[in-house]
Structures are given as C-alpha cells and as structure tokens.
Length: 85
Image (cartoon, rainbow, N blue to C red; front, side):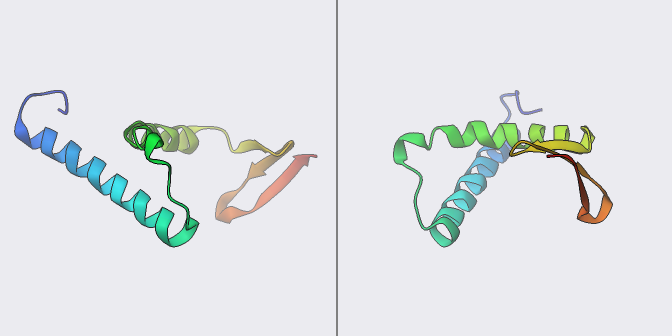
C-alpha cells in the first residue's frame, strides 16, 4: 500500500515519479523541441496520478466520442464512423 510509512512503497512511488518526469523531459526535448516552463513542473506528479484513471475511463467508457464538433464511433482495429457532423 502506498500510504504506509515503509520504505519500499515510498521508494517505488518516488522512482515512478522520477521515471515519469524523465520521460516527459525526453519527449519535450526530442519531439516537441520546446521545454515546459519551470513554473509548471509541479503539475507533472498530478498528471502522473490522473493518467491511469483517464485510461481506465477510456477503456471502460463508451465507444462514441466527440471531437471537434463531430460525434465519432470507434470500432475494433481503429476503424471509425462519423455519426453526425
């Protein structure tokens, strides 16, 4: 459990946040070529906690999304159908 005072879970949490921050820095350097402002780095641990919850919501949610004013139904294999536009 992460909410204990034992060293193992706390070390795992810190290593996970370090890995998340390092991968974010690499993505910014290699792909975006624009670093995140230093005053926004405190948001990164929050993002690290929210991302798995967002993935669960997307995995167990509806197969219909709204994107740029269009309703789209996603099918297996990445195929999609525009419902209305």
